[in-house]
Image 1: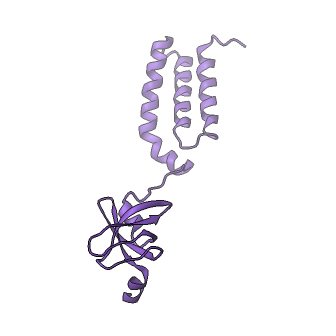
Image 2 (image 1 turned 30 degrees about the vertical axis):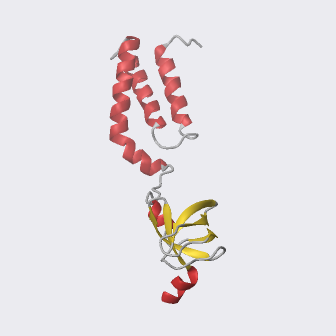
Image 3 (image 1 turned 90 degrees about the vertical axis):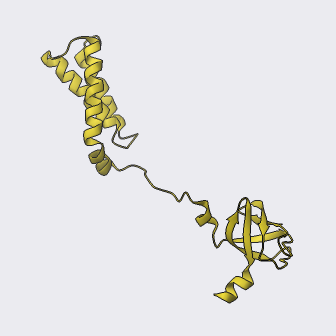
Length: 156
């Protein structure tokens, strides 16, 4: 088996890339492998000659295939695509935290423990003692604005 045959080389690389789609799903690698087979076919019928023309044809055919069939292969193959919430304000709203340093009176900041970290916290003006559970209302710069859980549940 002679590896200096460019038709054979482009065909083997194309098949390897297409089989790699089983390991790396997403629909891109199979299109790159298809572009290799296009080059192998063009070399076979004498449409292109040499490495420069082969690489140019591969690049152009890969771009055309990717732009043309990417949506189709994404639907058929799938892939891991999801959109997470990027607004941290929504993630912390209505969550429960525990007071680590007394909050209040007035605008005196205290500290709460939330998700394993301590945060500066502001209350509603009343004194919120250490150990109380509080509900997070919003965030003011780096401080969390909280209210006691008992107060929040009695209003609902």
